[in-house]
Amino acid sequence: QVQFVESGGGLVQPGGSLRLSCAASGSIANIYAVAWFRQAPGKDRELVAQILRSGSMRYLDSVKGRFTMSKDNAKNTMYLQMNSLTPEDTAVYYCNSRVGPYADLQRWGSGTQVTVSS
Image 1 (cartoon, helix red, strand yellow):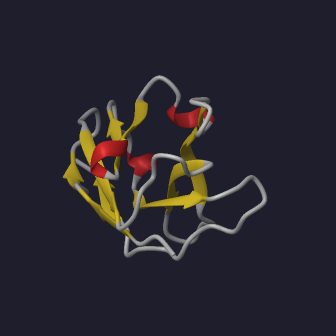
Image 2 (spheres, rainbow, N blue to C red):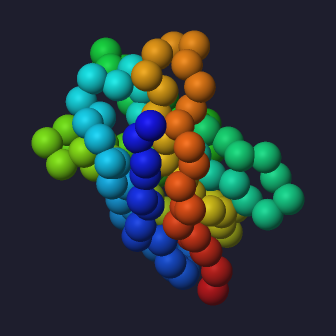
């Protein structure tokens, strides 16, 4: 199993930006999908952004135009650039991957806390 270590979270004011990083223990170059998820207090974990092996990308409607996901296969690292943050973006952010379209997600990492507050 691939393990993930998320970083880059913190406290930011509304309208601010953060860049999250996710270091994978193995290659992510040919994995079917890599993705960022988030879980806010009292809510279910939700998919925020995803990149498929084909290059196709998908974003949660509420972050479209504000968040950009990217990955560096050479570094086995994925990123989430988050701009124009709002308090509703406050959550623990996690990265994960699937080796195939019907495969399970990998083991969850510890995540990184993002708090948007004035």
